[in-house]
Structures are given as structure tokens and as C-alpha cells.
Image 1 (cartoon, helix red, strand yellow):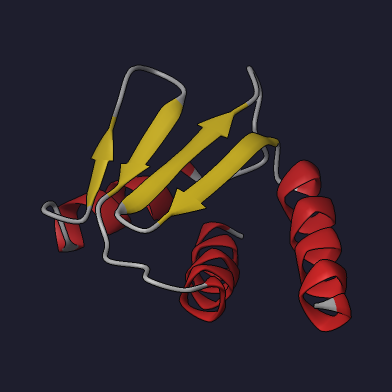
Image 2 (image 1 turned 180 degrees about the vertical axis):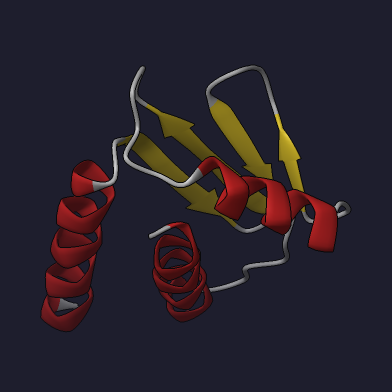
Length: 88
């Protein structure tokens, strides 16, 4: 549990630096809510959506919706890590 808490803290820091207000993942996916001026390359988001439109969709101007089966904490952490890496 302490290991997960440390990983979550690191992810929060990374997300904040990218201009992500909220990263929320659950069993059936989740969403990323960006600040008004995120430090994310818009082309990275476009590539995600174009490459996997069933998994990633914009939900309004500042939210990215993620549709993935994430049954446990480990899969959610791995998905969050991968997503943040792709957005950098």
C-alpha cells in the first residue's frame, strides 16, 4: 500500500507539471481534465485519439475520456504512467 501511495504521489506531481487538473481512473476507464493552459503537446492528444478512437475521446474542450478495462490498482497505475509518458 505504501508503494502505491508513493507511485500515486509521483503521478500527481507529473500530472500537475503537465497542466493536468485531474486524472481519474476506475474499473471502466476514466478521464483526464486539463487546466486552461496545459503543457501538453496537442498533437500527442490528437495521435492518441486518431490511433485508438474507441479508447480515447475528447469530452468537451478540456477533458480526455478513456475507455479501458482497468480491474485493479496496478493496471490503473500502469495506464496512468503510460498516458502521462505519451503526453509529455
